[in-house]
Image (cartoon, rainbow, N blue to C red):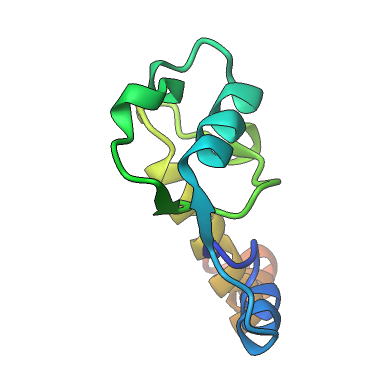
Length: 103
């Protein structure tokens, strides 16, 4: 998961196609407003530079990965990335099917 894509294959594809994760400040602020109009970080005065590296590709579903104790989205990104890594490695299936590892 990166500013280039929501999964490792999509990130690599974008990288190989010379795509960029950099967006204009106005585009970034508009994304924040679209996700949550009450987000105080969606105010242009927080962003004095003309462009930024977008923190994550548009389309990430924060609600799917929301961590109850987390006040920001960083943990959501970590949860989604960990899930992808476990799934890609085959460990997720082992964890779900092994009686010794189930709670």
